[in-house]
Amino acid sequence: MHDDSVSPLPLDSRFRGLRRRGFLAATGAASLGAFSLAGCGGSSDGDDDPKAGGTPQRGGRLRAAFAGGGAGETLDPHRANLFADAARAKALFDKLADYGPDLAARPRLAERWEPNRTLDRWQVTLREATFHDGRPVTAEDVLHSYRRTADPREAFRAKASLEPIDLDASRATGRRSVEFVLKRPTAEFPNVLAAFGAYIVPAHSDDFDRHPVGSGPFRFVSFAPGRSAVFRRYDDHWDGAPYLDEIEFVVANEESARVNALLGGQVEYAHELNPTTARAHEGKGQIDIVRLRNSAMQAFCMKTDRPPFDDVRVRRALFLIADREELVDAALSGAGETGNDLFGKGYEYYADGLPQREQDLEQARFLLKQAGAEDLHVTLDTSAVAAGFTEAASVFRDQAKRAGVTVDVRMGSKDSYWSDILDGGTLSCYRSGAMPIESHISQRLLTDSTTNATHWRHRDFDALYRQAQSTRDTKDRAAVYERMQRRLYAEGGFLVWGFADWIIGTARRVRGVEANAPANTLDWARFDKVWLA
Image 1 (cartoon, rainbow, N blue to C red):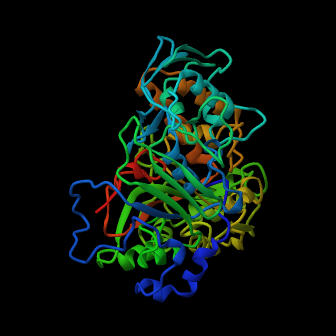
Image 2: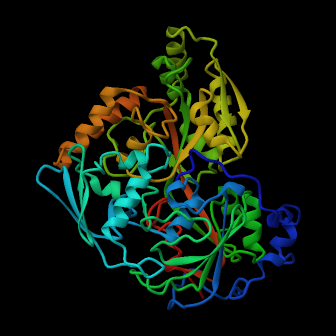
Image 3: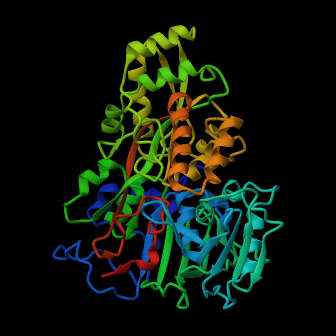
């Protein structure tokens, strides 16, 4: 998911005590009355094999702790920004497609899709599915959902991804069939269907926070923004009913609160643990640690339209200042791998033939001198909003000092960090969850992208993207993407220093959590396939 535009707000009051009573919670001596819920016991005994799958069992309520968005939270799936939003939306709603572990689009509500010869019209056939109120999911619901998302008055996350569709010309050709008319040939149109936030909602539905109706595996029970959301199994889900009776999403913004709630038996699933926490508990028998490899791009984000980073020589100097291995070791405790200033390592179209960039302080000084910036002084915005951010900022400050660059680290508010750095400042810590390289470009690197944090705005680059999208042959399309990535590698605004494991903690009685599921993909936070042993 993505969390590069909105930041979580402070801890829910139910978890504040966990910070003070961390030792008691860790030993199982503390309890929270608010979490004494029917259907969920504590962790299983130590004889239970955490890796044994066993036969799925029905029943129980699983409590999952995520960082949240405070009192302003919503269940409107088109407004999803945080990982908590995405997890809740996935439970209540469906998309036409979603990303597999290889970041290729897989059918969901769409049973199949087929383009015409020129790739500018796609026929999508829906599977038989129903909303939670019993109404069938129809082509009109699909068109309503996409038109709502594309509303020019709104800033819905999927708007940029849906931009290739001419929604005025697109039409229902049957109850379960839609003809999408595109503004230009688009070879990777299934990625549009799988776009983050492109959920299907019933036509004329707008009461998302009091009575949301979706077609997902769980149906709505209750929602207290910034605190809790409870959903119940939907027995008629097209992909089979979940094993769990209920899922409760609880808000705990501090990582220490999430892990202590897990250790103390107040929750069974804790999202986004720090590498140091994982190392402390992995293999110790009290909880299980699940590592989702290659999930989160870790980067420094330079604004390319303002001094000093409007000079490409200064950006190239920073590329050469970074010691990526040191950053991975220090900021991620080694739980990741080095980056090469490009998004999507290991994904389709990734330009893996470019040389791995190494630290070269002498060349960095030379470029800075050329740019008249020998005594460069910059402010690096960071925050404790994400694991490794403050550590990475400190490490990079020390690395820059060895090149004669002064970096002042400025701590931002966790409440507003992502929105603050989108347009403010010049240099900031940044991360992103998994998505296809095509989606990363469309959402972040086109002139009109809604989350263009580096302010990379080049019409010729936009034209290359359109060329890639209209190229039918995969090999030829890959060549265009490589050309785009070579330019970003040479002069872009993302200093991508690493790719972090996404770390989840679970109680030992939890089964069915998929490990081969980078964050933001179909099987990440997929609770309809999870059960309690």
